[in-house]
Length: 170
Image (cartoon, rainbow, N blue to C red; front, side, top):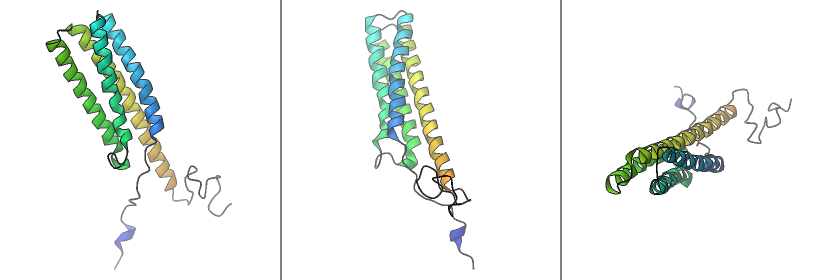
């Protein structure tokens, strides 16, 4: 009778995604997205009311990048990517809802309001997606290095192999 433990996958817990690089990249992306949105709205003929509204919507929607940074128990390392997707979905809802309110209720010009919010939102979503893919890829590569069958541990873990030598020190 054979044991099933040899055929089960290694279900070790995932390392948490480092929050500081994500926060720095997305914070910079927030500033860029507000700037792009304001430039586009201004170029489309937006007045001061439009620019103030567009800037406020983009700042609020862009700040949703903090949701994946909440960490456990709200966002676990296994579900971090879903947290980023949730923030992106909420940002889309904020942008669409704000456009509806600003254009239909407040009577702001349709073209400049829509273009400013959409361009700024797309920039923020792109920056956030690139940051998330980058950090998830780094985590997966570090896990793969730590699992190498040659007996070497991750050079980042400080264990055997951290100096580039094998387990036996050769």
